[in-house]
Structures are given as C-alpha cells and as structure tokens.
Image 1 (spheres, rainbow, N blue to C red):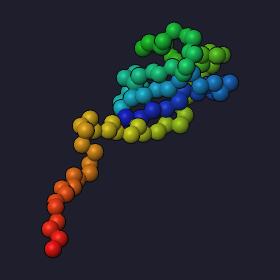
Image 2 (image 1 turned 60 degrees about the vertical axis):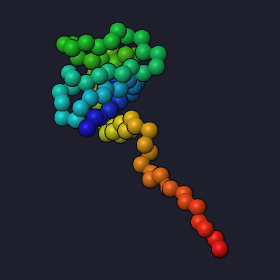
Image 3 (image 1 turned 180 degrees about the vertical axis):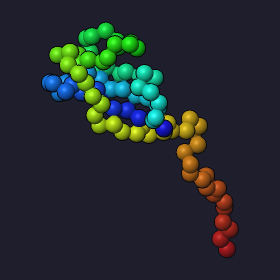
Amino acid sequence: MRVIADIKCYYCGHVSGQLEGDRGAPLAAAVFRPRPGYQDPAPRPGPALRCERCQGPVYLEDVRLLAPPAPSSNHCGRRRLRLTRMNVA
C-alpha cells in the first residue's frame, strides 16, 4: 500500500511538497514531489529536509493512502449483454 503526505514547516506553515512511499518503509526510500514553483535544489539522502521558505524544520501532515492503480485492460468490469432476436407470432 502506498501513502502520501504533505511536507509542512513547523515555523511558517509553508508546504514545500509531498512525500510518497510504501507504507512502513523508511522515509529515505520515499519519493519527494515538490510543489509547483519549487525553487530549492531537490533533496538528497543525508541532510535533513528543511522548509523551502524559511529553512525551518518540517513534519509530515495529512498522511493518506493512495488509491491502487486502475486495471490497465479495457475491460471495465461490466458483463457484455448478448442481444437475441425474439420471434413474435
């Protein structure tokens, strides 16, 4: 199961982006998705992630489960109805 969470600053409340990863996996294995217009360099393993605006400490907020991907086949789960001709006398 995949989870996603907003990266929010303790000091100014700015949301720098989102972190997406597997539930129960270490945060180092998660993918950082910056907000539109993000200016700082992409974070890399090692140094702690800081707020883009004020360089304050950040925390994860609004952690939620991602919906599983939709099946890739063209079958939409509905049964195909077979129409037959009825003889009316």
